[in-house]
Figure 1 (cartoon, one colour):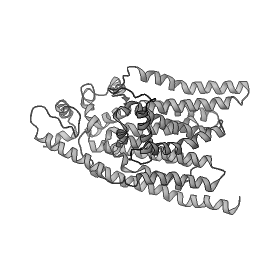
Figure 2: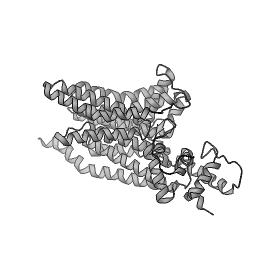
Figure 3: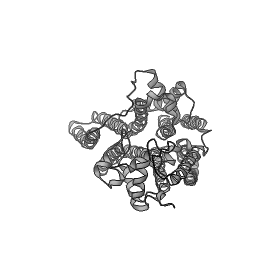
Figure 4: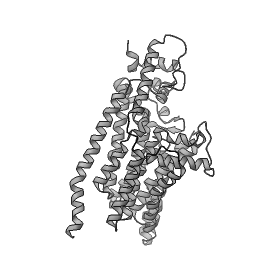
Length: 438
């Protein structure tokens, strides 16, 4: 290998650890900000865990898998129950533990990017963008662990499902990936399209591989594929039992409103809060073009299908949101918590371009830099604490109102959408931490 070709790799090895360490420092700094504004009081849907049949009735299997709106959020409910047992459901502890789960997601995503060929400095630069407070609702609200868990399951699931390890180790990795995706489906509703799309990409890749094998080997490959996908199919069937759609009916994908919302969701992943379908179409092209080209170039390449699976799953999750929420208009697409579901599109697009342009080193470096610059531009004005401050203020004002309240009905829409009387009584019975104040 020539010296000039070796120099960029040597530079990457030297700078890479420092770049990833910078992401770790940024994560710690963000954690300190989250804790600085955390207040020990449930917020919004967290109050629903104090309803009859939920935490007041203890840990029940039926409750864990019951619907919450259109979601099944078993791990988040289990997290709440564990915190009730460990620290009387201290909300600061819940917010902290949820942010640590976000850290696990960030670490898994960066590790996957590096293992799939993206240089560590580039992965670190992209990781810093994911620390933007644009998704503050997912960080200031312990209940939103469901989002991080579903995304973590997607990364781990795709990593395992498309494993090319030989023999039994590969089979175990693929089965583990399938089970991770199943867990994601029961963590958050977006985990369902994640499971469907990733499984479909896996089946297509294995089918392409089988076509190039002799009959006995192809038969073994198809049997293993069926065995790996069986838990996915069974889980999807189980997930639909008792499912009911939300209060708002779905918006047809044949309407302009649907696409307006979907494209605005995609552009939100690049940090753009401006409502623009054209900008969303640009961001969508940045993601889709290299992914489609990768798969078309070599349908038997597991890495191309793996990147396609993660990108397609993320887009399918956003498409499901548009289906369920487009009735509320494109402005709703810019809700903070949706940013967490769209932001991973940026590093996945960067990885797709990097792999696609492998034979053209300068072009692929430029493409990754362009993806980073586009997202950095979109996120440029999204680094303030204002979202955290607003939630903190609402919680502190609610705590003062609760302390003054003696009898009668109480409603505080800033922290909960319903009446608080019954929830407060359940919290006192369970001796939840915020009720212990004099």
